[in-house]
Image 1 (cartoon, one colour):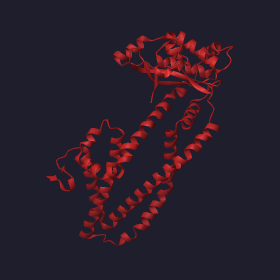
Image 2: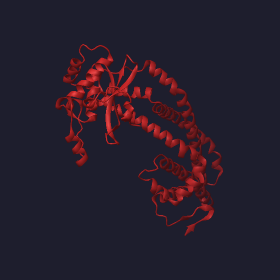
Image 3: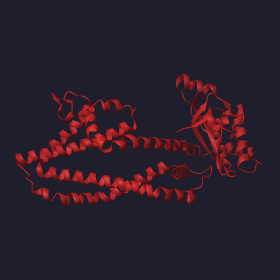
Image 4: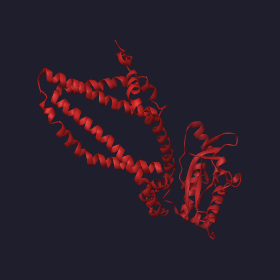
Length: 382
């Protein structure tokens, strides 16, 4: 059998699970409508519509509130934010600093956090109101017949309408997923569903296509970039507890040095000259997919590591003497016309009031402490 009316060229033999799910949503709602009768089904439909309207209103208000509050929060954190915890601070102190500094430095992350907080608060506050509105609004529904074949027929029709609304909501979620991840693992399969394609083309895309297909992927890509940078700061947390030998070595290397730049350069020279690149670790990963994770203490003890190990050790030693340093990941020039995964550092110099890049892994090949055109050979992640 083929349902071709109104351009819906759908075959009942469509075995796509998305189609099955959409049909099942409507079918279950229809059966529930028959079971509840006209009065109960009408109350359920009214509650669904009220909840949907309140949810949309909450999204709009939360988005406006987050946009308004974001610059205020950023200014406050810039002026009153946490100072970087000491090297021996607890895990939770380091984690709190990472979150707070992320809210300060990343606008989309800050907006998303404020939006989720405001939306959750609004839904909590409006949840009781929705129940009251649904209760008051459903009073006239009591006039509908509550039993008999007529009531069940009307209830089934109302249930089917409710199911259609639920199916459209599910379709919108799938449409958003396909817009965000066009190469995602399930995108092609979802779009093979004839029922999904028709609902998306006839209803979802005309209603919100620009927002979902154009704005949302751009926002998601930018948000992913910020989360990648925030994820890089995890080393501030996992490398927070520094052994005495690393702290003592950093103090010895920077002894007599005045100013942030002199200390940063001394540590760069030390890490770059004392650590040997571990070719065996690279071979194990490339040939056997075997990754040997190591912390700064292991790198310091063995004097061996790859780029991420150099960068983590440098950041740890720098923080132990009061410098603000971070690990940066991205792509590094491979000397053969291409780029490959790489890690390096940035350190904040009070004298310049700026972050400067450095690459201790490449120190033996030249001066890679804030050289000209550093960005030509190092591409930051995101």
